[in-house]
Length: 204
Image 1 (cartoon, rainbow, N blue to C red):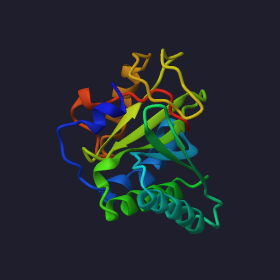
Image 2: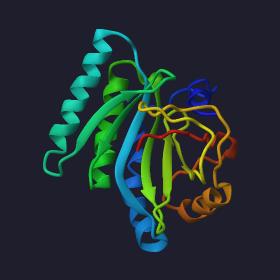
Image 3: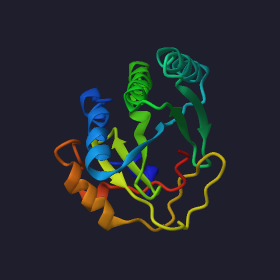
């Protein structure tokens, strides 16, 4: 399972739901202070692009807006397509608040342009005390967060475009459930565990 499952889910898009998205901008404090999990300084928003000049112009404009609004902190942004036809807009910034603002600006612009159904998810990267990656994923179709913790070497093949494969890889379900228990008061966590879709080849 992967992004295709999110895209083809039965539920309608809830919209960016900024109050839920911005929960990460305070939740990270608990992750840092109580669980020794540090922000990695990167986040991404994933969507299905349209091959139209209007859509491409919207995305280009949003890149410029994100860079401009994050000027003081030096937000960097770039987009890349994967082999499954999904587009990743990747933001790099030392401030997780700025990352959340940038992600929300992009999702809001896409929805305002009438393409909200193409929003898939936002991904925020963290690292534990041992430097291993932990991801918190916000599913736009559901309006919920869930943790994703890859373990070991996955069976998926990542490309330069950050392919998201449907292959079965290794994930630490035990660690994910532990994070759910630890962060349930901080983030609106997806209650249906079968909707905790793994994303392989995350390019952040």
